[in-house]
Amino acid sequence: FKYTAYEQIMQDAKEAGQVDPTKSMWTGAAGITKDGLTRESEIIQFHMSRDAERRLGAPLESLSGDLYGTEDTYGPVASEEVIPTNGYNQIVEAIKDGSVSFKESILSGTDVATVTSNKKPVNVTLSRPVTKIKHSASGVEITTSDGTIWDAKWALVTVPLGVLKASDITFDPALSGDLPQAISGVGLGNIVKVILHFDTSWWASLDNSHFFGLSQSSNRGLFTYFVNGNQAMNLPVLITFATGSDADTADGMTNDDVWSTVRANLVKMFGNQIPTTVKNVEKWSWTNDQYSKGAYSYAMVGTETADFGRFEQLIRNRMFFGGEHTSFEHRGTVHGALESGMRIARDIIEEEGVNKAIPLSGSGSHDLPRWSLFGCLAILFGYIVSQT
Image 1 (cartoon, rainbow, N blue to C red):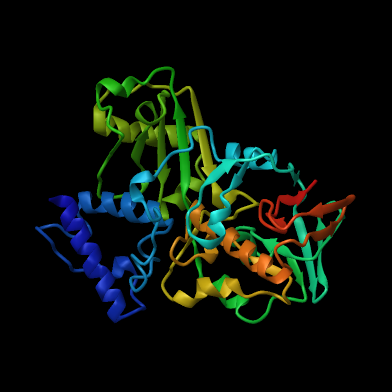
Image 2 (cartoon, rainbow, N blue to C red):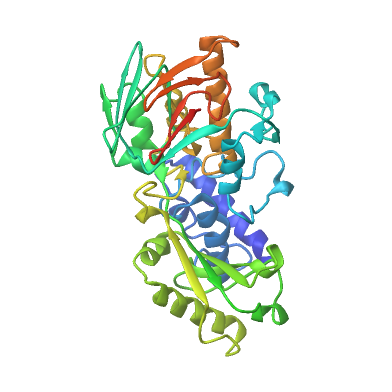
């Protein structure tokens, strides 16, 4: 009943944005009443934080009403959303050692899947931030912070949007055409994620749901939604988030501050049965991370549909841009990033020819086959991906 009211308020806010694209979702929701509830109602505030601001990575005050709902966050099969219990790094490691590869059929479709493989290991060079990319009609030259120069026929630039917005990489010549508009036109959100470790899952006897939350009239996104690690991963952990404008507040909080705020919210939910101490607090603030400088992309007020597609501009037939921020439909998602890599792999295969190899030099001589991790020298700011 109350969630239906939330959906109706958001739908009306979206329609207001379609009439006037200068309206944000928050502005568009002003004055709307559904079943006696408004945007200020506590339960509506909770859903705005959990179902919009957390999912899209931005405050409603910035989210475009005109483009709200045009994203497909969970991909073609929403019921198959999963949690990588050991982290995404295990996927990268499996691809690095050659034991897993993407299905070849992905080159002609949208199915992102992996298969057992015995391909050559992929070399991933760590701790070498890229500082400069020089590009010409004959190839690319990448300089890293230690002075190493990498030469390649193509480069795939998959650094996060925050790094591009901060101009942490010098492009020579400077980016032109549609790319500056793409970088400035697409919004970059902020999310803070916190994992709380306990000795036991003390909450299991109180509420062992997959998730639970707190609705309140202020600080709607400040650690009010909890994922139950006991249910999801059989671990005594709670996962919580700071979303919307509250993510900016959480950025400046110490772990002690975080636990104090979280515990106060849990006491409101469960009473004084909450432990006074926590075993460990892990906080991820992507905005404060020099290699991301933000969470993920979103359509802000003023963003045009075409801004995401502008990243597909090929620079001198040598430099490609990939990442979640280059996907309009799947922006802000892992599969959006993967699909951008598949798109670029198709482009390189068409340019080079199916059976040709891509020469690569830098810190030794390498031969990069046309179908490796990304199909070319990939620049992930702190990482250089090539083939051994």
